[in-house]
Image (cartoon, rainbow, N blue to C red; front, side, top):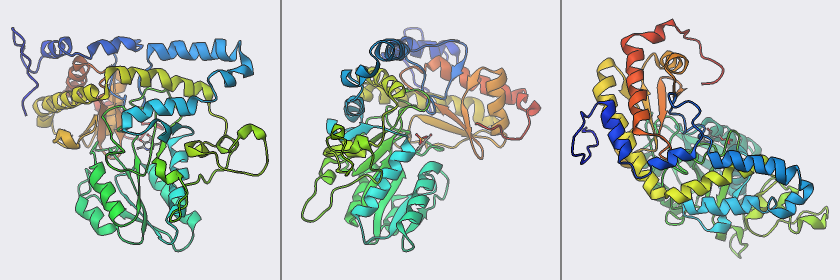
Length: 438
Ligand SMILES: Cc1ncc(COP(=O)(O)O)c(C=O)c1O
């Protein structure tokens, strides 16, 4: 692989810091980095795929919500913008994923939203008893599916399609698994370990051909690449807001339901949430005790939104809309290519493997590097190299590129410091036991 070259009048050596700085100087999105709080410029943050950085405007917005809206306006806040926030912020996220404004709502966690949609889907496909997923899926997805199968009854089963290489699953393997008994196919669009991206349209079409519904987990895709749920005719989706959407730790997630699935017809029942809460009730403030679902997607709300966390999601979504999701994807591809070129030159000779796809079209915005000592290398990076990646069992050092604020210099520093950990065997002084959080 060749490094991204520039038309610089004085070309820099491709594996030098000067070259990285040159790429930054020519990056049309570089100024968005200034929109974030960067407490220590020498800390190389490569974990925006787990928890995005804090935008300056979010810090200001949270202060405003706490001090003015809550502190001064008190309960009047609900009538002054809080009540409609799940729908309003959902409408903005809809623009990032190719959905209509009234097809996305922000509420609860990804896990809870998955549960709501999986149960709703099983009801909508009553008589079919199979759910299909793969073994690359995020654990919470697998757990929710296992729980849903238990709840649904003895004749339901979960079929897990296996990946031969830990990177991806072929379309052929799904074609074999999906059949006329399949109620639902649920997959992560970008795999959390390998960063491999599925062909959303092809797999959704496969599910539909068999009469099944398709549910995508977009956690590792949203905000990092353009998505077009309508063009792929997707039925259902969930995603979190604390990774590339920078909504903050534990920020509420979103869910998408294609509009026509909420309409009752002669041939199909409309999708209903299994959690009948008062925020999903029609005419909520009538305060009647008999449940009637709210029209549209609002029925998938449950209880009172976590307003402080919800408010923190909006400023960053605005920032991403300003930068433009196509431009962000372009930069993300350039940066993951750059990272892979550095890996090839500086790390592969030291026994580090590439655990992500080489083909940028099949790759999300993080790159996993594999090494048998991955866990201890990760610790050395964090504890003495001021580099923050994360680690996923068994050997993945995950390096996340968040194109809104990751610089080429960050990537250069991250890789060269990782090389130092290997060359000087700095990881050897760390225990092999796993810390509580990786
Ligand atoms: C792909 C994927 N799905 C689901 C989750 C869990 O989301 P939550 O903690 O919001 O339930 C994560 C968390 O990292 C994830 O990466």
